[in-house]
Image (cartoon, rainbow, N blue to C red; front, side):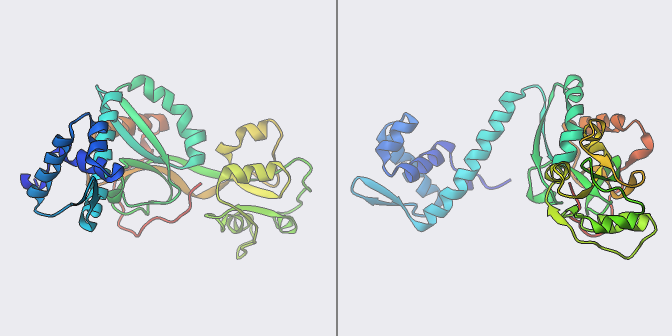
Amino acid sequence: MLPRRYLPPIPALMALEAVDRLGTASAAADELSLTQGAISRALQGLEAQLGVPLLIRERQRLRLTPAGRDYVAEVRKALHLLASASITLRANPTGGALNLAILPAFGMHWLAPRLARFAQTHPEVTINLSTRLRPFDFAGSSFDAAIHYGRQDWPGVAYLKLMEEEVIAVAAPGFAALDKATDILRHPLLQLESRTGDWGRWLAHHGHPGQRPPGMMFDQFATLTQGAIHGMGAALIPTFLIQRELAEGRLVPLYGPPVPALGSYYLVWPAMTPERAPLRSLRLWLQGETRDPALTDTDPPATLAGTAEAP
């Protein structure tokens, strides 16, 4: 707990923030529905409490000192955090919020269709979703958990395995038939920029190791899929992402059945942080959604940070 002398009254901080934006005590008073004298007293009390001059008084205007400008920048962040916490509380007064980082393709095709069922069984939990393509430091973020693709290589987290992945070589109808896997090398290839080794692994699976063919790069599966649909080349795409496109004939398989991908999808959360009730509810519910108790593994790894293989 910080000493109370370092925790100024919120009205004084709001007065300082308003003066910084508006330039005069009278304008700040109008915005905060106070008198000009109340604003002046709040600012004087704040300077006295901190023991640092915050304002330069020039006739009818107020300017912040360099130290005051730095201070008010941090104050503004803190006030935003307090306001955000209050908004979250009012939006969900009986439960808690869960901040979840997701991968866009997996979030759209696997997670989102299931979240409606979670909301029905857990109306007390509000889930806030935000897209992140690469592993990050939980300590430096507001996320409670994340969806991770790859291996168990994210340090300091616990894991719940959600789904293994298979990829299939596809293209638009009319693509030249392949008599053997290496025939693919005669055609334009499309690939995800975070999975540039996928075509090499696909060829190795079919008995042709040691190759790493180049291809046109895409940063997300959504645009990669559209490129394949519009005839730009052959693509390796997870089967769960293109079930509709295959069923409707907008994409057709090129050679062989789906092959195992390099990674799997996991729910991950900080291993050393006490588990909050909203996260526990989601974790147990997702464990049920996998319909396979053997898919759980909550032992944190001791390896280096995760790779950038993410859809």
